[in-house]
Amino acid sequence: MSDPLSASLAATVHTARLAHGLSVGALAERSGVSRAMIGKIERGDAQPTAALLGRLSGALGLTLSELIARAEGGSGRLARAAEQPTWTDPDSGYRRRAVSPPAGGPLELVEVELPPGAEVSYGAEAYVFKYQQLWILRGHLRFREGEVVHELEEGDCLQLGPPSPTSFHNPAAEPCRYLVALAKRDPWPGQPAARADPN
Image 1 (cartoon, rainbow, N blue to C red):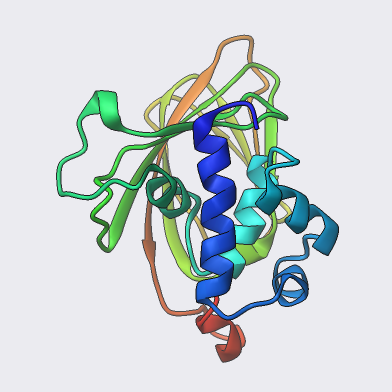
Image 2: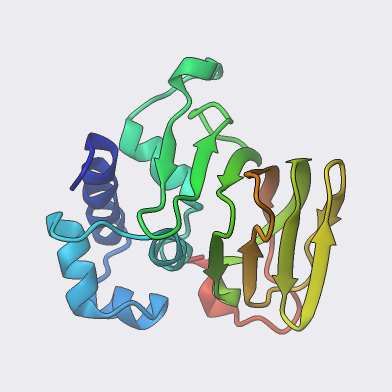
């Protein structure tokens, strides 16, 4: 691992998997991540990308922010700016800051900076049990939600619809900063109730 937070994230994935009583094979089936890759991540032999962590956290009933907060081991209702954990995707350079206090609650705020030209994608399973809004703080974001493409500019705020595959792309020459506000919710109609526990 390239930094202590990444190493802590690996341990957190392992601990969360055991807490759910899941074997590596069961987590692989739920997340769509191979058993070999999960093993490498938990041993610290591979640095997970944002897309991989998104799939694993969804299968474990956690948001990526919750994974980061657990890895940091913090608690309390106040998150000082200097203490807010950040994580950088090794693939895209996407940088994610967990703004909300680690004590948790029904609402989470996450600040993201997406470098010029960068793109990050997530599967629909990452959104089944989350209500989200995107607020663009600076720059331009091309957000694909299923078959729909939203061109979002500074100040725009988008409420996400039913779960679908998404991609976040910064087509501009300057970094894009945006805030994600998310809250856990019941499954959308038609989603299998069995997923309510892991997700």
